[in-house]
Amino acid sequence: MKKHTVTEIGHVHSPYREQAGTPIQPSFGDPRDAEIHIEPEFRAGLEDLNRFNRIWVISWLDRSSSYKLRVIPYRDTVERGLFSTRAPSRPNPIGISPVRLISVDIEKCLLKVRGIDLLDGTPVLDIKPYAPRFDSHPDDAAGWLDNSQHTQTADDRFEKRG
Image 1 (spheres, rainbow, N blue to C red):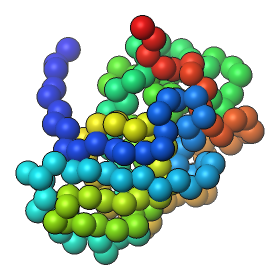
Image 2: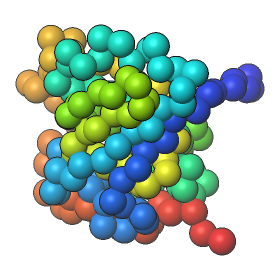
Image 3: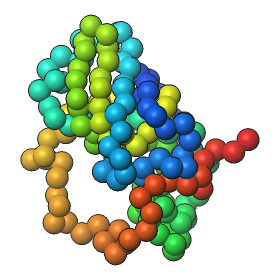
Image 4: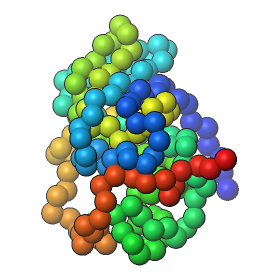
């Protein structure tokens, strides 16, 4: 298996300190405000971002437990194949969060966002603009999620222990 290196470009400052009680997706729960602090060496990359309403925050879910290939996801009570879920414990614990972009302060390397689903201190690997024309497909099938009516907040089932 090939190994790859990723670079942390910043980190999240959010009101969530543990997985339990955190929204399992940005669209669930109270749309809380958060900040994304970007490392100064990436400042120039923030130019033109302020013209977007939403961004994708790609993160490293550093407090997730080791993965299993079959899991009981948050919105279900049935064991599922990991890759048919958004469980945070994965071979590469990469998270994607489409959040509302409130403001961009290039000088301070600071993004203010709303609707975060990430823990305080979560490493940010990348930011991409959300483009509804490319990123929204509301009429497509969503597998077992189409019939799911369970929780909208996380518990501690995927949290790293010890």
